[in-house]
Amino acid sequence: MRGFGAQDLINCYARGVFPMAEGREDPRIYLLDPDERGILPLDHFHISRSLKKTVRQDLYQISIDECFHDVVEGCAAPAPGREETWINSGILSLYSDLHTLGIAHSVECWSGGDLVGGLYGVSLGGAFFGESMFSRRRDASKVALVHLIARLRAGGFVLLDTQFTTEHLERFGAETISRSTYQERLGAALSVEADFRALPDEISGAQALHLALPPADQDRQSSTQTS
Image 1 (cartoon, helix red, strand yellow):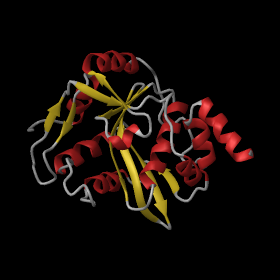
Image 2: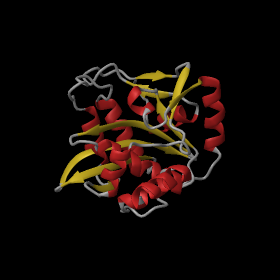
Image 3: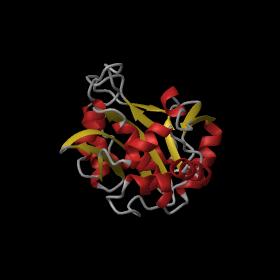
Image 4: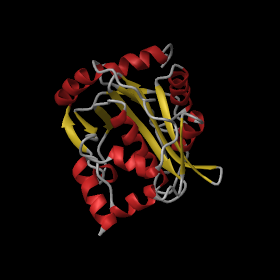
């Protein structure tokens, strides 16, 4: 896609379009505007009891925007069950430019000084466009997702776009909506002033759970802890 730069990509997100490649080695980039769109409602996020325990124990250290390039590379790397990815060198370059502009962000998950998981996405107004995640240790990307949700809720975001809905994301509350409904929600979200850096870069797992989970789920969590 010759001449396609960071501002062009920003404009695409603002109108509900996102890029993908056929494969890591394919140099071409395509723009997609699917009939249906996946979102993860921020007020209906839920996780399993075992994941709550993992997050609360702080088994992994979380950082924000420390190694964006490495996170995208991790998402682009082949993995069991995901031998091919849609992230090519052109996409990596574009999102690196967005990161330099302060628009693309990463959540990193560490263990013993090693990057073991993470995710990245794009922030515009009150919308966050989740792009991809990866894990090299059990539940690492899921822990990163909990911390992302906490950050989005604390920062005043109103829309988390997952592009598509998968069985994996449905476990967290993701749902599919029509293109027209998505466009309405996107328009409303772009008018919101949200702050991805509203929280300190380092918060505990307990703090992340408190911020990420709806009040009813927090009540169940507290009941479980004290019973």
